[in-house]
Length: 82
Image (cartoon, rainbow, N blue to C red; front, top):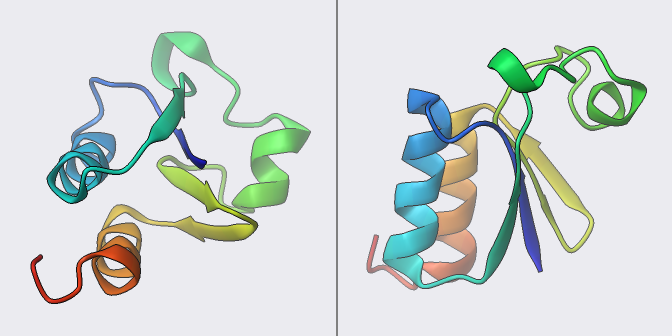
């Protein structure tokens, strides 16, 4: 299952969640950043050494940076529709 790290009020996370919804993907979102903290945790830094959100894990494929994530999701699951 797709996992998304980031808080729901981050505009960059919202871009990713829009793409996830448009593609009808099942996901788990994990609150990180802002009031939730965790940007400097070893777990997040192992996924994104820049310590920023959003970050996704799609069956072992780790992608960070919202535009890169949207492009990845469109290529993987969009079949030309996104």
